[in-house]
Length: 347
Ligand SMILES: Nc1ncnc2c1ncn2[C@@H]1O[C@H](COP(=O)(O)OP(=O)(O)OP(=O)(O)O)[C@@H](O)[C@H]1O
Ligand SMILES: [Mg+2]
Image (tube, rainbow, N blue to C red; front, side, top):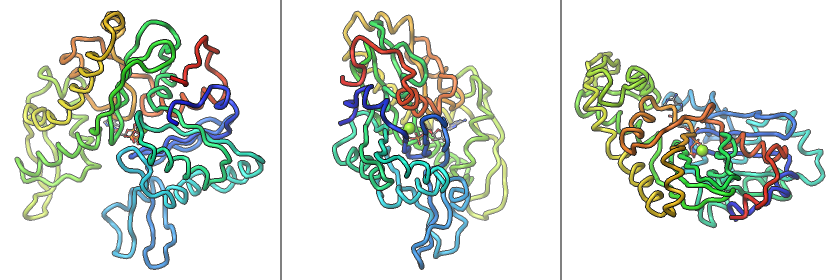
């Protein structure tokens, strides 16, 4: 079950994976983070063969002839196509490492799964790793892995709050004494925010912008960009919806803020729910320590300031937010986390 793996069992694992909706990350004990690539595979539908995985496959999105299909085996935070996930992982891990792992007589793997992953999603994560040769698979709640990975003092009695901003989901928890006190998973992440911006440009400015091209707009709005303290407008390049010709427009930043209001409200509601469910003594700790943001979408320019404004709490972004969860798992594998009074993962 998620979160039920003990530290002892995790120390016996050789490999850890974080199969995300956007990216796949693999940590090998003794070797560190060896894979950090888009969770994408390109398949030849005529022959069924794999053409590319990771970055190469992602670059093919929307550019392939009819017989090549670009697929994402992970969706909404869980593996939806087990066979494809296995094939993708095999290619990402590479022949050399695969051979080294095959030499382990009893390969043990760890995987993080979203908080509250249902039994089917847990099963899919386990089966994916079994297909790669694992004899045993330990599952760890992403919230705990990420909290360990960003160095939060999870084992202490003071409460801390973590916000995992992924592509498909946002997860938030209050942690104390190594376990989760209250938590929420919200089915909205960076992808929903990108999508809202793309839709806004299409409807308001008749400008086409592929999802991958949203980043320049976000960067233009960096710093205080997405808050009322930022610039009032910014120029953005795309293609005209009707003619397909290149065009640039002045985009009103207040309108962009408005466009992403719905997904952000969902995130704020989740934070509010966790705070309401949290014992009052712990809420006092949180007011001092604030919220630690991790996950790739924590890098969304202005998101931290927006949360600061909305919650009145201090908000911090972890040092390497996108890889916190996998590095946390790695630290557990390598026994680099202090033995605790309470077993942190049995909550
Ligand atoms: N510099 C950046 N600025 C804004 N957004 C970013 C940046 N870097 C990554 N992202 C966004 O972060 C998301 C990916 O985050 P992450 O790698 O944590 O996702 P994931 O773990 O694959 O997803 P999930 O945990 O939801 O399954 C994407 O939506 C991506 O657009
Ligand atoms: Mg993730």
